[in-house]
Length: 170
Image 1 (cartoon, rainbow, N blue to C red):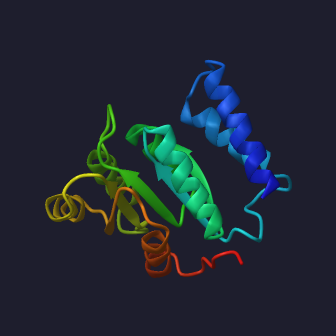
Image 2 (image 1 turned 90 degrees about the vertical axis):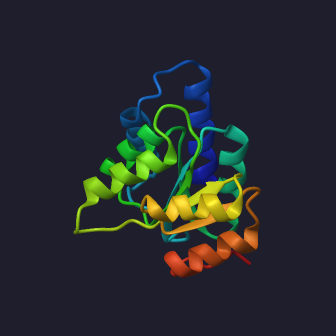
């Protein structure tokens, strides 16, 4: 997973150096980083993690790496929507409470953009009460909900249901 570590370090450097965090530049950098283009064969599932908390991002990305999925990160709902316009993802993990555009608002926008042609599975990641928040997530167009802190076995179950080509690393 050397390609992923290089990308993570480069994105962290760009963000830390005060570089413009436009989705377009981050998505372009991500695409250029994959030598030869396209996803590496060992990571058949492409997941977008949308969360404004850097620790939550790192935890989700590490878990997805363990489950043999390729992860990109968006730090806001608006950034997630913009990235989904540029890149086709197999699954989106979406935090509900983000500044600017919330996860709920982002999903409504994603569903509007996708129309009837495609439905990218979106899974809510929430620290809120499970029942009320889950209902609200499903009502706005999300496909499932994961309570925070996320557990590896729960994430694996969601991947198996919504992106079944993903296989854990041995």
